[in-house]
Length: 345
Image (cartoon, rainbow, N blue to C red; front, top):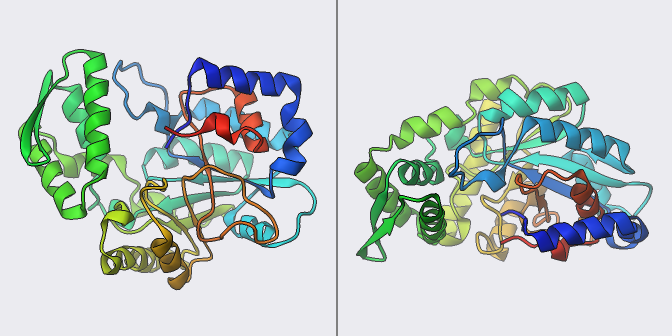
């Protein structure tokens, strides 16, 4: 869900910027525009172990990025306008849309004040169980358990596995292995694995999730802003590909219904939870259209094409890696000419 940050990729972006490649090819390779995906926005931390660092940006970088986007030959638009331009013949300047996933409280603490001050459109995709105080952010539980213990044991694929987590390097290895494994589990097995983890290592998942999540009261602070769009992202934020069709459709439809009951309008836009190529498929694209959403965004990198060239219910996005702070890299990426250099891990 994030971009490579190796020296090779960094040098390619730098070379493309200095050589002006993005300016030369933007009109032919940049499509109608770009949808940017951000997740957490909060001040930098000094912890040595931060496995989710790629999914965070600092308020300072968000401020710099917005200022830069306003200077560049781009129109910052909301999702309604992005969909209109994706359906129309190419005309005028390209667009960029700012979207925020995960429904975490730091959005209202750190991101929204900047977005409001800059008066730019933005979209927030909400998993409704999180706003209800009922969601389970299991990835935060995994981070906490590994951060606070020198050894982790879990039942993995029906057998007890042990992971040394004394060093920072060991912690990263254990986290990425277990995170990848847990993402493959069907919902009921994921719940069992999460309960096992939290029970063994005294993680209060309910409290951890409530503390991290936006509440409906938080949402109320920005929902009336005319620049704000509130979208849906299911109820429980599951990997849809691991659900039976009826369960997946229920997650999509119920997320929309719950949000509609809590908001002054029905959400028209949807984000697939996690959103990579393994987390959803064409069945779910059809479900979002069936539910009446005007659009559905993925985390699959790409440009949004004009003239109906992009499926509005499987729109690509560029997920920004928070470990990268270069506005030059951002400029090249929003041009759409080096997506191969920014392939996600």
